[in-house]
Length: 210
Length: 210
DNA sequence: CGTCAATACTGAAGAATGCAGTAAAAGATA
DNA sequence: TATCTTTTACTGCATTCTTCAGTATTGACG
Image (cartoon, rainbow over all chains, first blue to last red; front, side):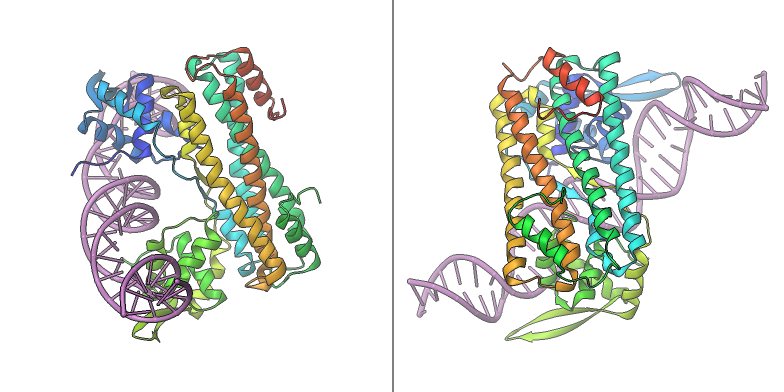
């Protein structure tokens, strides 16, 4: 049985359609540019192009780099064809994996300090990525875009990321303020404050500026 | 070698700390309440409690339901201990898997209709969850919270979700308006509009109300 | 009385991650 | 110039997680 094409296969195929890359470059490029849309391990990113070659959607050729060789992958015509077909298929639903939220939900097993620390770590992670994107946009302005013909796409995606990160950072500040008012993490029940929040949310109102 | 405890193990352990559950209830409960913090497959959620029993952190007993038995899992003292320890460990960074963004980034392989469809599907998924949370908050108000002593935690998490969903929906509307102005998906380059957006983003400004 | 949804799982294949291991090239430092 | 570190450039293996198919009972509804 031949392996099937996953969204990760199409991601690699789409990168190969821009230009040929070595396996190493592919892992670096995919991790840098797709980290916040399609986060995949280096290991997988090394395996995908091999699979594409096996299926006839890419070709490899060894290139000499001193005393060592590296694999350069290129897309084939058939690869271009399946890539075009992909754009018409159903998009998978998004998946948000946020361990910090698991810790918040079960915060009653630990201290207030434990929740604050989880929030701090979450904030540090988000803030790091936030700054990366801002810096990347700066580099587009003064150094230019690595693929200028695709600038409109990556800038629209960057807009999404900035909005998300700002929202998360605003929520973290809000959550910290809320938890500051808790005497403990446990058994606060449906107190007046929580009821007010619930009432707002049930009306699809944002309670952040409350 | 004994299996290690993953964040999913702690999630199940935390649920077991609330009350004993059957395997089936555990899968349903975990998927309903943790879907947007820690999305895991039904299959895994059936395996986790078995692993916990093997490690001594939970116990099973068969219960009769007519002609069929079901497994009821309970947490052990040792399980409670490791759960408390977990709150002090490092939180994993978040992971956002959004295929719709992959399709946006590589939209130049398809038509404008293809991108619009990907955005529609993304919106439908988010909107579904958005409405679920609003409905859940409504049910807390008139039916009460299933674990009232934990209301403050789940409402704070709900706040996070509502903020995220609203942000995503706002961005989708913005993206649709942007793409409406594109003559095609390809080769728009660093045009004046894209440059304006880039400039705003490089200053960490939101361009959504532009 | 039949049938359809919900309950209640398990096995096996395949996808993806984490980690360790290997080794050369390039750059930094003394 | 010698050595030390970082970056380049991967692969194999164990483990984790998902997908899918399969099995079979219970309960609701017409």
